[in-house]
Image 1: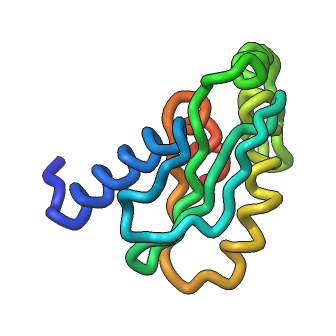
Image 2 (image 1 turned 90 degrees about the vertical axis):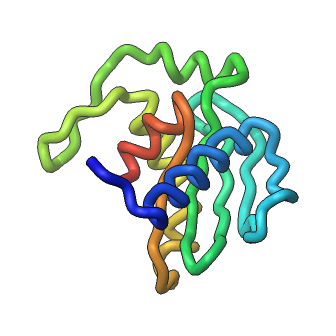
Length: 128
């Protein structure tokens, strides 16, 4: 698969945002953090809602704290009403993030991207 320059730049940005979620320092980026949730609890990950270049990014941090690892080790499945199966910890964490993210997404006119690393990537897949 060939990547265009714009797609490559988007991949680079989302990768960098996923890394930045570990320290929460978005000061080197040209966009703006609209919301940050930095309290980490079981099934409540650290996440950021960030905007740049007419796009909205929901960035979920990867596993770092014991509460993150407690979520990672929930070895049960959740079956949704449309018969999809998800890791229960990641599914519930995703619902937690979406509860806030929906307020920013509903009136947003540009593209919306979900990104993260590790635990954050798992949540991003569920939210997508």
